[in-house]
Length: 176
Image 1 (tube, rainbow, N blue to C red):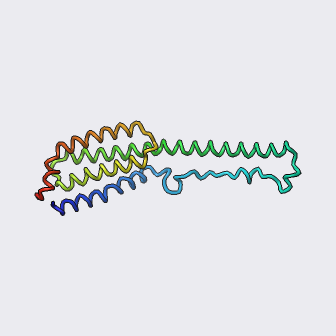
Image 2 (image 1 turned 60 degrees about the vertical axis):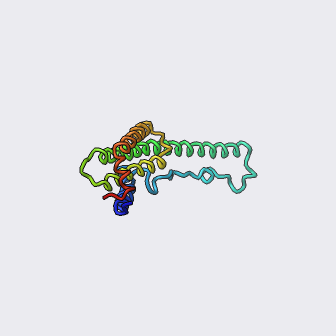
């Protein structure tokens, strides 16, 4: 086995994968870092508290406070669900970006002649690893466009492996 080629492939993959995800966060900055989670907490029990002498309240007053607390909690949950839905939609677009970028790099590795085998294999393996990582990370987005791109990527990988199988086989023989 040619360890130099393997080292080059590994270097390309180890740089390519984080490059894709950092790039995705640069071009799609919303819902990253501290803004990745819903920040709109409302203290409904502090907003509508029972007074210290709650035992002196009438049943109607207690019911009114409990109702206000329940409405406040329902509003909070609706806001949080709206945030989560908007985040999923946005992350679906981010996943499409990641998948399209990786498909483009895969096609580049497939059709660009005159590249060293280790570069071609590094781009191939990097795009596959980043596509896999993106799919796992953004699995919950349920992006139909992302799924279509994933299917195209799958068939491009099959074509790549079939077309470049001699390069795969040569690595085991130690050819340069």
